[in-house]
Length: 253
Length: 290
Image (tube, each protein chain N blue to C red):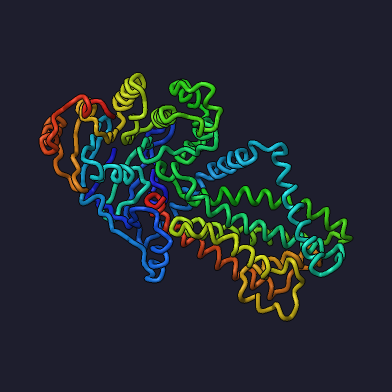
């Protein structure tokens, strides 16, 4: 179960268009200032996701979807409000698959699991399943810098779903995979959702959101624009965007 | 599961193989995550730090012929280079026990300095795992410390050999070295966390560090013996008494004086607490800044 209560997230970030030139650096140091910008990524958002439900988060790039999912994951605590989650979490986030490129896929699976709070035995017990599903074979013993982005994605997905999460957070994580993988991944996600897991799916692929989600939240500049039945929200969103459903909006997860 | 931000309470059915976990993440009070749950999570995931250390070490020696033998060779080579330097500058070879003095100080300094140079990279280079997984980030610098501590303890074997060769008789006081190594480790943890955090905000830190370390080395009683004129360093160089105390234990075979112990403890606690506090109060930002 996920409960998001009146959550706002702001953060400061340095804002630089390009690496600063030597002159600019000196001038800036003289002034003693750095370009700092306050980003209000999420504003007063509330919703609940119950076991067995899948929530879709849609919205333009920069609407705050990824930030919100990271807050649910517990990576970025909210600035205001609170988020309650019940159950083990599996995360599959776009901004970075949690892997160290210098070490082997196998070591990464174990490290990622340990960081997530699983014990070594729990991970070892699931390892074969993870390895088989990812179909990476001998690559698992090689450093991950030798992997293609599709292979990265497959392993990350396999880890996230096979550790039996009660909550699965998926953020645009499947776009690197090929068609066969996507189909397999979607089936697996549906399976997780069926096993009474709660799922949050961030996607620009409106087709898959409509297919998989029970409830959709449309974020616009950090605020909830509309929430409710997938079909209604998606139609409103598409009208607002000035696009109608095409193969492009349909396909990408 | 939210690291540091969470109050885990077991709420799952016992049949659930992984145990249900409930977390609430709220804004931090005063910028620091709640301490008790933070350290609980940290302890619960200590295996991660150990595993991380193991795989980092394996990767760092991946393409070398000698592998972990370098853990023994590195301190020996550095010691010999510095001994040569001192011999050249002072125009003549020094006695054997000076070599032991130099080595013991140098090993302590190397522990702290590598903790800093590795600490600088620990957050910035961790990348993906910070963006994707909620866990107490302090585990990353701590896993580096775990590596450095192992290397330091290995170098103690070499030091033992050097002491015997230099004619220093083993002393009962050597047992004091054990709590003293705890002090050194806490000192290294504080430094490492400070640097890890500094690098996230100012990438210039990594550039500056070699110069700072070189200067710091000269300000420590390693390449020279303490005199009356160098006593002011007790108050200005945090590492001065830490190294001096260790030398007194190993080389002179005596328990360090109360003044030395007091100063070493005070500096260490200050560095440790400041480092950990800075790190924890900035931890939320790491996921945004890197």
